[in-house]
Length: 86
Image 1 (cartoon, rainbow, N blue to C red):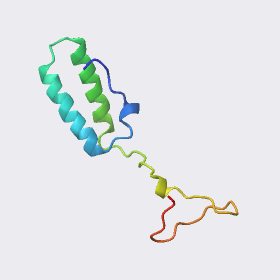
Image 2 (image 1 turned 90 degrees about the vertical axis):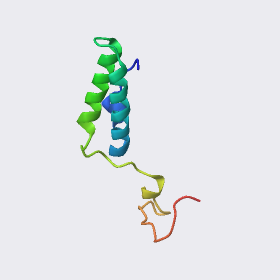
Image 3 (image 1 turned 30 degrees about the vertical axis):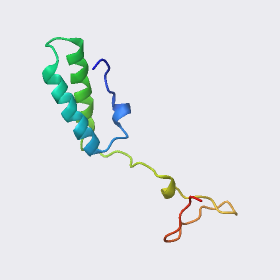
């Protein structure tokens, strides 16, 4: 692993996905040489993951959950079983 994974890159992931990535990086850490740049990058990435695990993040917004304006310009409410998508 040659790059550091930043909080910005991790922000959209779920706790499940963060946990899986944490597990993978922990395995890579065990294989990295002591005092190598690779090891330092993995440790920095793990720190970013740990800081976000369990932290409330904005939910992902799907196109169906966005309110669409109607013909008069007001935001319309979606009726039950109605999709915004054509």
